[in-house]
Amino acid sequence: MAIEMLYFAWVREATGMGGETVAPPETVRTVADLIDWLAARGEGHARAFGEPARLRAAIDQEFVPLDHDLAGAREIAIFPPVTGG
Image 1 (cartoon, rainbow, N blue to C red):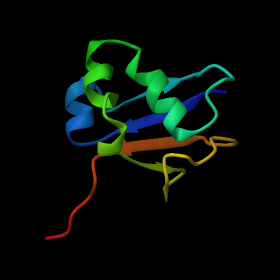
Image 2: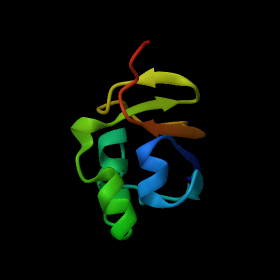
Image 3: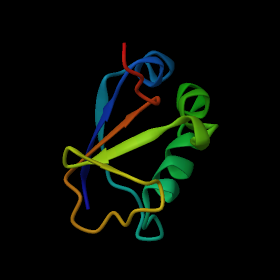
Image 4: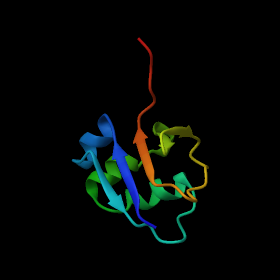
């Protein structure tokens, strides 16, 4: 399954890219699994995804908790917590 990833704010800065298309293994079933898998992809990814508690996610433009299932996901955005102001 190919997933279009979008990265924002310091996640984008750490990875050095605004997004990428990934094909995680079948063992990656939740957003948290995906974040762990991404963290192992290199130094920039390790910086961006090394502390999952600092991340938020949206699947197909809907906010989801990190334990949300990836089934059917086409696009996943990863970003830091959003604050108003």
